Image (cartoon, rainbow, N blue to C red):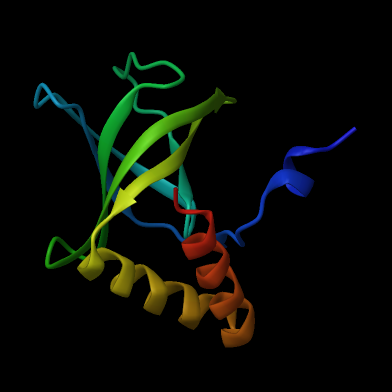
Length: 125
């Protein structure tokens, strides 16, 4: 049997910061980030949030107050234990640059990061 950890191809970095989850309708929820990778993120489930698996959102991850942020278009991959796991569907060039730098500083293995970026590019449809 393949576990979640074995299926995961991208290294996650623990990073505690503010996030905002925004629905296409404009409804928004503030929360906290647990961890992030090149292909997703895990956040604390906001109290009034009513999403479900497959729902799509914009996830804003604030790196320096609200001055620097990572914007990811995400879909809900799983919901459990008061946490929401997201799969990254799209990330713009500025955001991927910020995420790359965050991963580089926290991962400590630039070669691993470059391998994951190559894998991410290879997985694109």
